[in-house]
Image 1: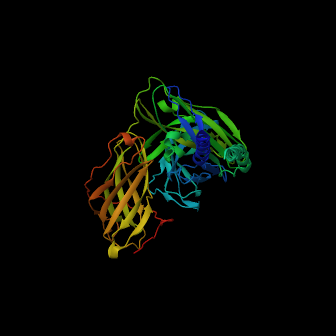
Image 2: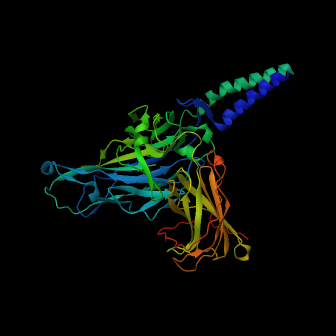
Image 3: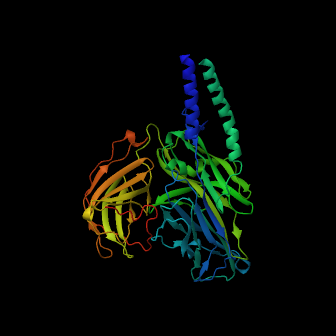
Length: 178
Length: 345
């Protein structure tokens, strides 16, 4: 009788624990003898969207708008440090047509966040972030609210060139949020 | 009594059997993911259940020769299908920021990471779970390494543009390698300074350095007490946080309401990284003019909190002397949203 009580108690405790903590109990791979168990994270997504309004055509010494970029921080309250960073990277530009074979180094491109605003929610955008030359942090945000949405339009400027060949150059701008 | 117990047991079993079905029905129509390409960590190690960082990032300490796997969800919040490629890239911590390297740049850690799929086409509203496996070689040297598990769109041109764009989203990986106990997570608040920024707002700046052996992601709050006429205010969230590598120094800032009396105040600043907390107190008076700092002694009133790491390490508890510091001016200021302006007698 006492044993039945205990079994029930343990069963109930097990159900409550599993439900309350959300522990899946899936052993992760571990080849060193340790068997770490994983829990299921109840969390939202951190997302980045780029909405092109037109193709980006560079002009030397002139800031040109890149697609409107939107970052949504849907991470849950507990599972967030409240900060995210967007790193931007430019590839080298490669020439086509008359400029075939020519390359403009990524370091000739400067990318700025320009104006940004909170579509919903709020947070602190680090004002000390410098314009990025080639590669670097573009937007650094701290202490944002749950489900906050920040939107900005980066602009890219190509330094004046002494090109051996005039022509069309193509490249890629990558924005990464973590 | 026995029958009653049997009925109860049956009810529990029945409830347990029905729960998954009910849950499945309830979650069969997941909410639309946020616009664009999204990423979510879907699982973490159960020994870090109480560590907020382990709910957003892959944070672990592994012995050489260990293999672990974690599920990451990649989502498409756009109305069109999107093709996404998955890979790991190296990362570092500099200037208080976690920075992901360009393209598929590799470091040791990135080279240890593999994905259950190289690419996938995400339908509108779809979230695809991808298993990320980290295999630490048996001859890996001790130390912490950084990388990111990434999903990236293919290059997309606008209308006849020269520049294509790529969106990448990722989960940070902070991986410590070594045998035995996990290296210490610890940091110190060295100085605090009161100042006033260009916009006329009082600012409290705390200089912090990472005294441990693991990176820290700092956040926290400030509480003001014993102000003029016994005023109290706060807590105010840290508005400019920092990620610091072991040995690195940085600062966090709290910007306050411009209507705040000058003081003096007892300022208690609480900073946290994961489950490690440090609390310091100082007597501060805000200057009435822009760009001037006021220095006051700082006393650490709570050291590194007990964590899976710091439990095995000596608590941080060194009282720090304060030197004058100039508060960097903030170009943009916003008012505290949740707990701001809570000035009370």
